[in-house]
Length: 333
Image 1 (cartoon, rainbow, N blue to C red):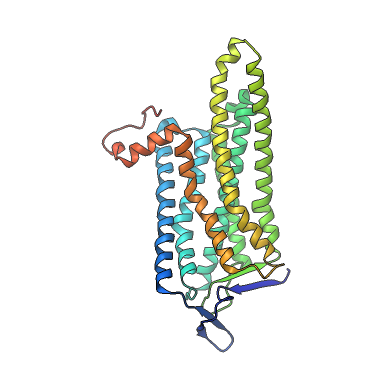
Image 2: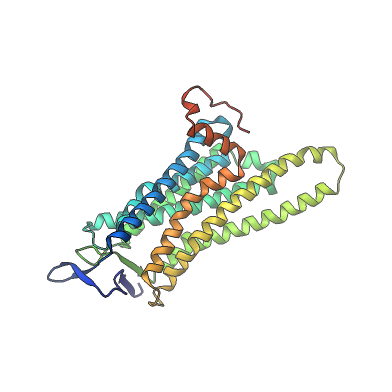
């Protein structure tokens, strides 16, 4: 176990007060102007609502419309569930900790918050890994796709994603990753050097695997496009439209993966460098953390932008049309 680095949000503030004092320990309280607190509450609560509403639309669409009952969409459903839980469970704790520096949480609540953060991030990236595997078989081995990837296999992938993330969360609680040091419960980042290994296995390694798979898919898709352009075979022409649809779906899901990496990579790099460079300001880490969680809001917009059937499903749900009749078997354009 390497040395631990503990820092609070009061590093750069001059006007400080003690949240609470005891015989052994005291906490420093940050005084935040009322206007800033109100604006933060409005902004962060709005982000939480957008995350929950957007991903709820994705979940209802896939569950309700039978056209969307495919292995790929079940994996997207699992990813949307991870994002929904971010907005429903993680963000309320994060909002409170971001706006107020003195919160009298019990240790179990603090550990639960840290466990949920890392667990749901792990679940998201594992779901993305399995989605990339699904896309690999769809594009690179289309003849074997239906035998290799089906609803049963997708269910196993989802169970593995959530099982591993649950184990990670439990491990974080056991190790006391989020255990505070003050009775007043100031906002404290607790980053042991040993946690870098956890980041490697739960973020960097899966990210490298996904990037490698999508690079392979890109190269195969390029060869397929070249073969189609240089043949007059009718059978190949008839399959070109299907191949084109699969490539479009792969491109969309690759964008989802890219957005995830863009949002989360700065945060993981920052917390990994923090034990070696204490000059990184705490507000920078907080900002990068919120950038990461904002990824949970972006995925529904990506689906709506690239998938016409998701756009149609969203319209029918928002307008309340699905409550006025049975449209489960509707053909989504």
